[in-house]
Image 1 (cartoon, rainbow, N blue to C red):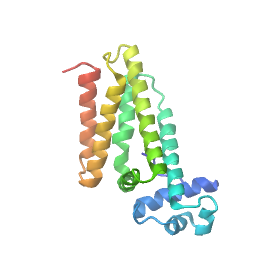
Image 2: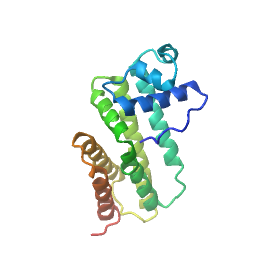
Image 3: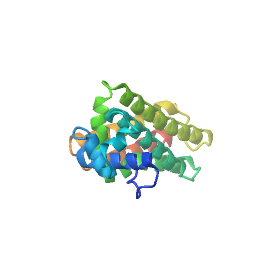
Image 4: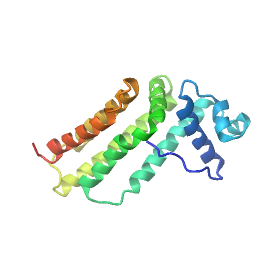
Length: 199
C-alpha cells in the first residue's frame, strides 16, 4: 500500500494522483466524484478533465500510480539476505497498511468493480502478478543460497498472497482490527514451517 503522499510537487499529474489518494481516503470509492477530487486538487474539475476524460480513466491511472510507488519502496530495500528481505516484503504487505485503513476500504470497493471494469481488473491482476513475482524471486534466491527448503516458490508465493488478501478483506469487511497482525504472524509461522523446515 502506498505511503501517505508528501506535499504536492509542481507536476500536475502527480498533484492529481495525490488529490485522488486524499479524496478516496475521505469519501471512499462509492462517494468519489471528480468534483471532490478537484476540491482536494485545489482547482476546477475542468483542470482534471484536461488530463482524464472520465473518473474510471483517472482511477485506472491511480492504480498504476500505487503500483509504481510500491515498486519504488520495494527497490529501496537494500538487504540481499533472502530471509530478511522476505520479512520486509511481508511487512509492507501486512503491517504498513494498518495506517491506511480508509484507503484499504476504497481499494476493496474498487476490487469489487473489477469483474465489471476491465481497466480495474487489468491493474489488480498486474499488481498481483508483480507482488507474486517479487515474493517468488526472493524465495528462489533463498533456495539457491540454501537458506530456504527446496520447494515450489510459486506455490509458496500464492499461499502468502492468499494470507495477505484474506487479512485485508477481514480488516475491512468485518472491521477486525487484529486481522493484519494475525496474518503477519501466520505468514511468519508459514515461512518457518515451509521454507525454513522448522516445526
